[in-house]
Amino acid sequence: MMDDDAPKSVPCGQETRGNICLTHALWCPVSMIGRSEQPETGVRRLDIPRGQPGHFELMQHGCRDWKFVTDLTFQALAKGWDTQRISDFIRNFGERRRPRARVLL
Image (cartoon, rainbow, N blue to C red):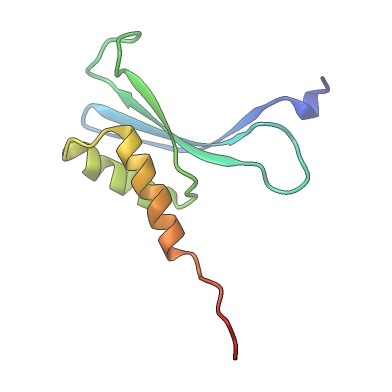
């Protein structure tokens, strides 16, 4: 495998509030024609010891608006949402905002 074909992660920011640290990145599985990045956010709970369940969770959400993802994630975690529910909400919200095809008569 050539070095260009190796998976890559591009850091896109990090923010800590209270005992939660969010780390944003674009995961690039392989170099392909076109875009193959997957926006992801790692949720690290600083009050849980490393290696314990719940210490780190990864959300694949498909949204590149990092401020939106950060604010929404912190608000949802404060309400008790799990990371799967948050990533599903972000993905569905993004699809609702996508322009729809129109039929011209």
